[in-house]
Amino acid sequence: MTGDDPGPLIRLFGLTGGRARPLGETFDLVAIVTTVSMSFEPADLSPEYLAVLSVCHRPTPVADVAARLKLPLNITRVILGDLRREGLVTIDRPQPAAQAIDERIYREVLHGLRGL
Amino acid sequence: MDYAASEPGVTEVAPAMAIKILIAGGFGVGKTTMVGTISEIRPLHTEELLSERGVGVDDTSGVESKITTTVALDFGRITIREGLWLYLFGTPGQDRFWFMWDELALGALGAVVLADTRRLEDSFPAVDYFEQRGLPFVVAVNCFDGARRHDPAKVRRALGLDGVAPIMLCDVRNRESVKDVLTTLVTYAVGGAFKDPAVPDGSAVRTTASPVPGSAG
Image 1 (cartoon, one colour):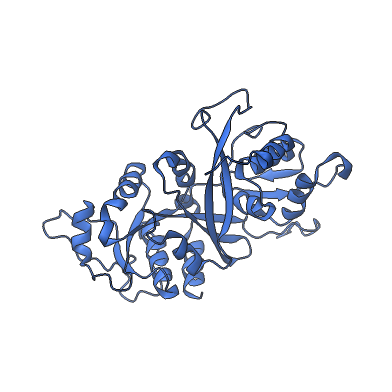
Image 2 (tube, one colour; image 1 turned 90 degrees about the horizontal axis):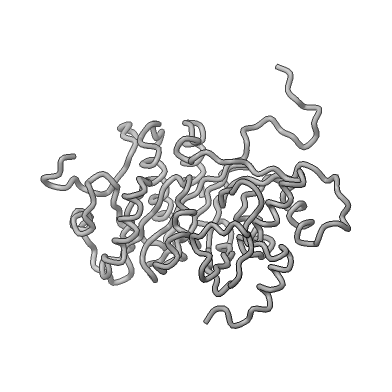
């Protein structure tokens, strides 16, 4: 059964002020998030927000951010939307994969898969 | 060429890119096993919170009134190099989570539809979905121990495939087999636009499927 224990969910929605959707333009599960600015007062941000900024020093896809923070996706997205609004992260808008893959990337992927 | 080397931490290489591949199929067909076989990490797990009425509804208030359940999302990762990853997402099994498929399919390179010949009908929804979306997919028939070997052409007919999507037999527990499925998908999904250097005859798509008799291929 799901939903038996609303405690964690309530806490998580407290974290986002009850919001379940991110501010601004929506972004893909594998959109790349990059921390671009550390110009904030750490005391102003909750630990989860700081953790996102820390993880995304290296460009990191949204789904990975959620998994590494052990947060549900939509909570993660709200956090990311907030951080984007504050100008602390960028979130790219990925092209559809079939258009984004050129021959070099195609060969890299095949080579990488076969080398596993 | 004067590269912007003065900015620390900013490199001039191609922007980071994550390629999304979906692993679909009926419940218990081996999706999570397949992801686990090839992923460099233990399949990562995250959840999407769902509200009873919020599913598919664009709630402008931004406040969900009633969160009732979660849908688990398991995925694996293959790092090709720094800044280039393949992400394998298992699709949620239950019909009520179709809206998640829309999100997963958006911008994806393609999909693997895992099939179990004992329950081929479980693969129909995934095949229908990807055909409607125009998302390239390959059908991988998971050959469990003791499962009868099936002729891919018969599976193709049973699934009502148009004769284009590759069908192959695989063992989701076997790394080489999963690699083969994924390389086939990647090649098929780029439409044979590029030549696979490892295929001597220059044919871009390798498929274990024989042509369907009478198909207008």
